[in-house]
Length: 395
Ligand SMILES: O=C(O)CCC(=O)C(=O)O
Image (tube, rainbow, N blue to C red):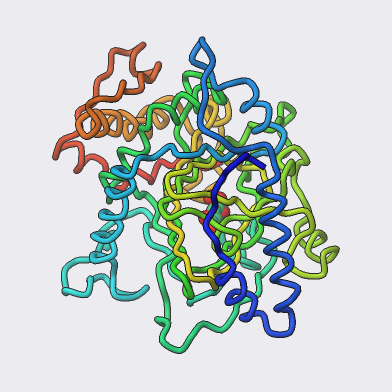
């Protein structure tokens, strides 16, 4: 365990969460505690470090490769976290009043109401909207236990916002965090390509489960298959992430190919998979999570909120000339033009960040440099970002 690392005390949440599971409460409590202990004993957390060539420190790279995830501690400043919280509050004000509604609670056109691309996904409180369905290529093979929410919970609550960069300048700026982009460069090469961006919203007593799955859908049978071929996600934590509300992963599973999730659940006797650990973070920590890892999250039956700012990147060779999997955008063959169009979000993000954090050295993205491209974040750019996620490089 990282010496001296202080994590949130979630003992009360663990008890409350376990109580939702009735007869299995003791088993759930033991599982949460054991998983948390194992997570904190792994050698995969600490500040981002680079070597003298500007590449991600080799020890970190190796630990990421071994476990499939790594917790970069203290990446986002309090200022940046406050910006994200403020934007979430104003986005919530603009959310539709329900899954079928096109207006917000003030009767204005709701956020995303006139978008072509899918934006806000809803769930019944503490539900598992994807598990055991054909949605997202059927990759969420099992339905998680759906506890009964308290009586005052809303009938449905948003749990996932897609295309988040068009709705939040704070999310756009975080997307261009220079140290994170240098990590992306080390892992995926200087011509790395975007994937997609989203917010996972897990409010206490309401937040939905995301059933066990592996993200990749395209390259499992590729003769050049390797552990990084489906890219990775950064998961930036605004309030932290715990055994109760966080994503759980099966360490090392990103190297095992496509797993039979139903068989793993049968073997474990429940969705509490053996050997899995939660991603434990403090506010401001950012996780890098291999998309091939078996991962998922339980419904948030605890007391702490989780807001994850998700954004992923690919190797260019994983998307160029490849037919998309159709999960985040319509399936299409990704050519240079589509990748360039999708990359403009990064150009706008770098400029938006430069304007807000002027003391930082902005990230220099090689494909823009080599083509002499410069992007400016202004009102015209904002209009240009509408529905940018129709081109998510979904593989
Ligand atoms: O944040 C969560 O609960 C789920 C995240 C996830 O499944 C993903 O990023 O692929």
